[in-house]
Length: 335
Image 1: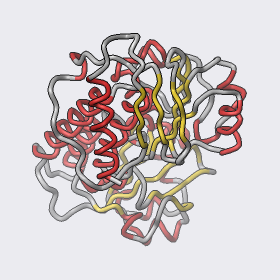
Image 2: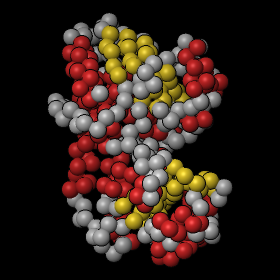
Image 3: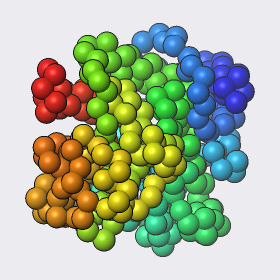
Image 4: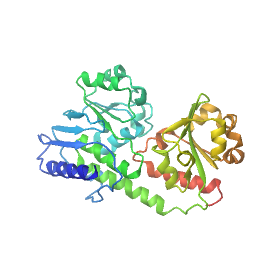
């Protein structure tokens, strides 16, 4: 898959380089998705300084293997916070007319109309914004809502949800290819890679590695333990911890039971700040059966981060990683 993506990216870059201006009629073909192979590391200039004509039409094969022809990017609806941020960075911010609830950045996007939650897609709410392009990911659902938007003549681009840093770089490149600006995508991926490498190089390894649980909650009725194949695993491991969900054999998410969380024995619990607020803070979390009996509960080692920062795994992920590394060293006494 990586070879195919790299070849297609090279062809797209060549096609874009041959364009002669804003009225170019170049058509590029791209494939969306993620892989574990290294992303291209060659860059020529910061993304903001790239001069790149946008093709009149781009053909993009998404992670759902659906081919979309994109000829109008004047009214874009994004269905995940990381996609909103990346679209903005790639130079299409003024075209974004609506987002989903997970968008918390950039500030200019926060005041835009919200069409709901991408994972529980409302086709009518999206179509009410008269979009010319809708961008989602493999967590966007249900399929019937996606097909309803497509049936209205609006292309819906679906990108892979990355669960590795390499997959993140691929996703940025794929999004840029869908928008017809592959050079900018390569540069953005390299900027993110450099920022992550810098954050990791500055960190002092924790010894022994702390056991960390990521718990997702929107209140006491929704308590999920995250495991492998989630965006939280590479963050926890990069920060020097052991993901207890993944170590316990959890793939995706499972409901938290008192027995399971006690058996996992996390030394640190990470939770979304929205979820922590809904529970009434750390005290509220520790009232949930099992949590107070964990090492993290006894020591009140609970870290809350905005969902739009920690879960969407987007362009600012290096900042979230730096913060997590610093917080872990602070509460564990290893600064």
